[in-house]
Length: 184
Image: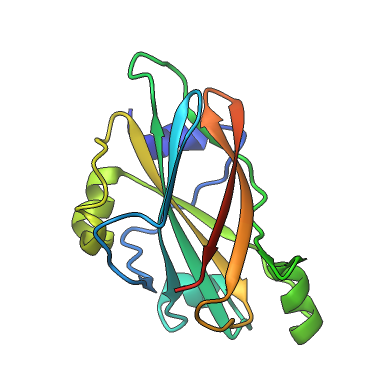
């Protein structure tokens, strides 16, 4: 069973199939931005990119937004014998100076935008979507999935400190991961 069909059956995440989704320009690196280990999963922030708003996926998702960020994550189960499905909570806002990005965008644009979640097969992501991140991803297709989140809104300055709280897991058991980094 493919990872995409696994996610379709999950009630915890909505997945949209878009074919190739090479929609961002991020900075390639030989190491991830942040990596965390939980009881059931390893959760890695691979990169933060910028959505190219002229491409169909970003144009559709960010309609009216001047900018969009793309957060690339690797979700890998720790126990290879663990059954079940990867799980992800739907709340994907991040904080800038103690205020949510959504609130900052609404204050500046008087408009709200919803984040889009895309799940990809690890092999396809490595070979077709972000080959520049291939050296960072050491997981295989059976034990992991790539999740990227497109978050439309206002443009922030490079180096802006951000923080986020994500709830991810395996087999419907969530773990909390707190990420603090700077926008590339």
